[in-house]
Image 1 (tube, rainbow, N blue to C red):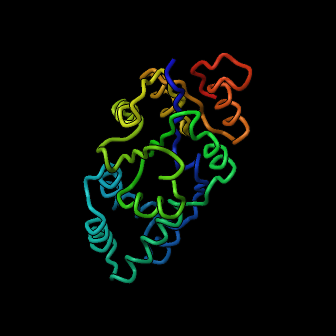
Image 2: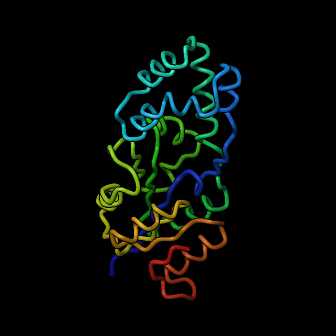
Length: 211
C-alpha cells in the first residue's frame, strides 16, 4: 500500500491573507482612478506568477508605469508583500507538522517571483513539508493540470494517493480531474477532519470530496 500524501495551498490555507487595501491607498496617493494599478500592471503580475519576469524587472516596470522613484517603489512593493505574506494559520501548521512520518507532505502554491525568499525564512515551510512547488518556479500554476503533475512527481507519489487542500474551488476541481482527492478549505476544523479521514483516522469513505 502506498503512503498517503497531503498537498496544501499556502495563501488562504497555511496563511491568512485578507486584503489590506494597499492598491487603493496607492491609487489615492498617486491620484489615480480606481483599479488603475491592476490595469497598468496586470501583465507584470501575470508574468511574475509564472516566472516570466525577475524581481528587478518588476521594480523597473512598477517605477516606469506608475512614475515612482526608488524609495516609492520599495514602499509600494513592501505593501504588496505585507498582504501577500499575511499571517500564519498556526493551528493548521501545527497539525501538519504532527503528520511528519505518517504521510508525504507537499505544498503547491500559485506564487509571485520572490515568494520563496520571503515566505520560507518567515514561516519555515521548508521544515514543514518535503517539497514546496511555486508556480513562478515551474512556469505554470493551478488549475493547469501540469502544476499538480509536477508536484506529484517532485514527491514521487501517484495522484490517487494524494489529498489536495485549497481555498479556491476551481483549483480543487482541477485536482480531482487529475485523480487526486480534494478538499475546499473553509475552516481548520473541517480540513483537519478531512485529513484524518484521508489518513484513516476517522469515519468517512475518504472520497474526492470538495468540502
